[in-house]
Image (cartoon, rainbow, N blue to C red; front, side):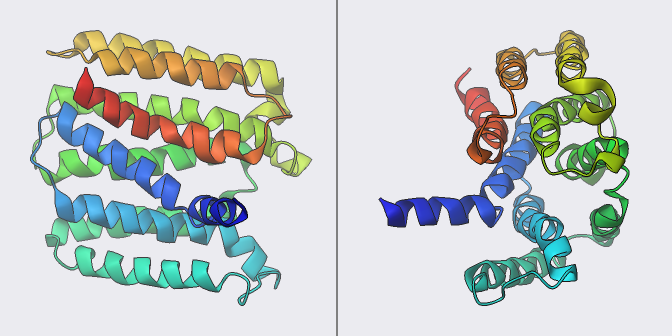
Length: 256
C-alpha cells in the first residue's frame, strides 16, 4: 500500500496527471471540431506539459537552492525524457506550427517572473492552456470558423473556472502581496466568479450546429468542485480530482 501511494504521489508530482488532462483537452477539441487526429501535436502537448509544469513547479525551489537532486532523480529523469520526446515531435511539425509553439513556450517561461502579479496569473495560465489545446489546432487547420471561435472562448472560460479551486487553496501559501482573486475579494466572491463564468460557457453551446451534452455535465461538475472547495481540502482535491475533469469530459464526449 505504501508503494502504491509513493507511485501515485510521483504520478501527481511529476505532472503526468495534468499532462493527461491537457492531452484530453486536445482530444476534445479534435472531436468537437471533427478534426483529424493530430498525433504530432497531441504528443508534443503531452510531453511539453510535463516539461512546462515541472519547470513552473520547481523553478523557485531550484532558484533558492532548495531542490534536492538526489531525492528527485526520477522526476529529473522523466523530465529529461519528456524534453527529448518534445523535441522529437516538435521537429516533425510544419514551421508555422513550430513558431506558434515557441511563442507559447516563451509565455510559459516568463510565468514565474510574473507570478507575483497574483491577479494576472489565473488568466495567464488559462490563456496558455487555451492556446495549446484549442487555438493551436484551429491554427493548424489554416481556417478559423465560427465553431472554432466558440470553442476557443469556451475553453478559456472553463479553464479559468477549473483554476478557481487552485486559487483558493493557494491562499494558504501565497504571499499577501500577490493580491490573488481570493485575497482581493474573498473566497465566496471568488467562487461566485468561477461559477458565473460557467453560464456563458454553457450558453455558447447553443450557438453550435451540434450541441454536446458533455458540455452541460462538465459545467455542473465544475460548479460542484468550486462550491465544495474550502481550505480544509487536502492536496489531492485539486491536484487529482479537479485536474481529472478534462479526462472525465473526454470520456463523456465519446459516450454521450
